[in-house]
Length: 158
Image (cartoon, rainbow, N blue to C red; front, side, top):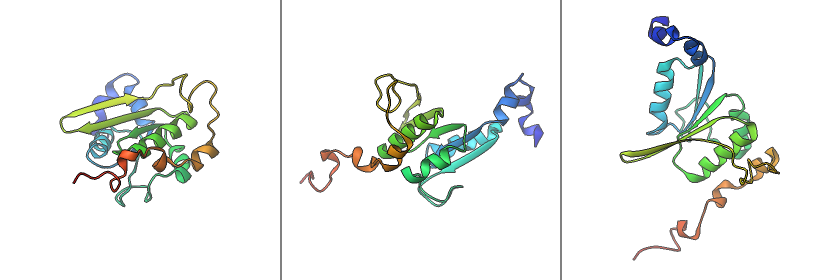
C-alpha cells in the first residue's frame, strides 16, 4: 500500500501532512463523489462522507441538531452539496467550530471553488457575533432561504 503513495511521501513534509488530517465531504453526488475519490487516492488520513442518501458512512442527513457533533470530528470540511439551506448550515457550523470550509459548485461545464474567510460584516462570523451553538441548532435553514419565487404553487407559468 505504501507504494501507492510513495511519490507523495518523497516530498518533504508533504506526505506526513497529507496523511494526518481528517476531511469531511458533505454531498456524495456529481461533485462530492470525485472529490472523495481523489482525496482517498492522495492518501488522506481519515475521510468521512455525509449525504442525504443511504450510501455513506454517516447514515443520516446533516441537520442542525446533529451537524455540530459530526463536523467536530473532522479537521477540514468540503461542501459539495447542491442546495442553499444546506450550504448556509454547513458554513455557519464551520464558523462556530472554527473549521476550514472548502465549498464547490458545478453547473454544466462551469464550476467554482471557495475557501471560507471571515468577514467583519458577517452576523455569524463577525467581530461582535452573538450567534451561538444553541442558536445554530434552533435555526430554521429551510425557511430562511425560501423566497416567494421558490413557492412553485403560487407562481406557475400557464
